[in-house]
Length: 542
Image (tube, rainbow, N blue to C red):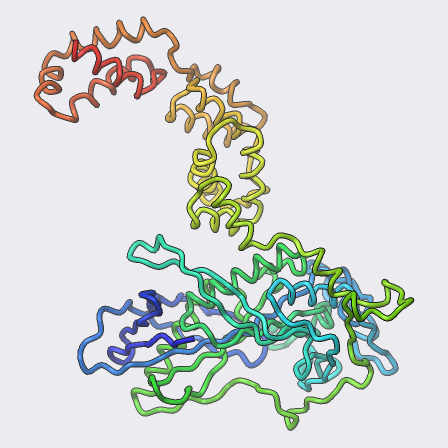
């Protein structure tokens, strides 16, 4: 994959990628708060503004940025990876800790079947090769929230390798086009999570909560195929949707169920790759993008001023304390062809069986939405990016006669707009799919006008229990059905405003709108503007 070129204008000022196929990644503003208060070893992200680059000038130096990601997803399982302790984010501190989690002598690990199945399903969804034989290793750390002094992981021989993750980014001046990119998946490995260190600055002490210690993680290592924060954030968001669709992880970043480490380096085109740094434990896609963009600028600034970039990441090295896990045998997986005769299906993992259980992935769902309903690709992304919104949309479609494009518009503009104003999730909406479907039916059969429909929606949002038909009747919002009365009203309005009529006949396009507004006001908004215009134009031409 060709590396986009980063043009550096002057230290601390601005940069821009000359992207592949006309796609650009621009530097953007960095938040004013701290990026993350994650675990040990985290690089800090200083708060300096990034200014979007303009066209590079002659003589400016060029830089290429390279970004790779390590994504840690907490596996959706009732128990931990090697013990029977429950997994519950909201449990009281240190209430879900088994003897093994606390690393008491004599305790041994027992592998959780559900975690292995989750890893295989994720690997299949990302087109990985599933290793029939994988190993567990010990990776040594010495921290208070890691009681054993080491983490059980699969760095040497992981469960899945050599996959790919396709994701889309917005491009174009108005950012209205979607371009698909692909990042290689180097490997997927099973590993333990650590506990939490809770730092109390007021009392100058650190408290340890081991509830999270031993929870199963999927580490998804993406190849350094990205070149800016926007691409990295889009890749993480797509992976998040895939994990949620599979049910292998809830991937709630706010609860720490999806955490990202970014490996970042810059170099001059045609030269060897630069020394990388690592920004750790980012739990927000937005902050991930901003942290990467800042780190790219920081490295360029450092190099332009004669400094050096320090390597702050870990790499596989036996000297760092990696060793095979002696208490766990190799993890063996089978397919239908290699399954030993007479084997109990409950005692082995069958890759083919899991492949058949894979649900529809987000990419396929988006393609179906575009084909089935004729919606724009960006609309299909919007429906999937909000939890529960696609199901809401589909339920409305089932219950209404309105055109899919009209349903899409109402769900993404009106409904989603109200949710964001109130900071509500789809599941917390006071408007049900049935209520919105009934409202769209009233609009479709021209029982109410578009403006009346918006009034009804606002009332639905405020008044639980009322139906659209009840609100229309109470507020007298139904459209006039008496054609003769509307004809007479329009005629009276023309007679009462001869100057406006003269303006219309002179070709003033705004004059007819004034007449329409007068008629609508006289009908208390109960007349359809389109019908009013047709009547007025017919009377003016007669």
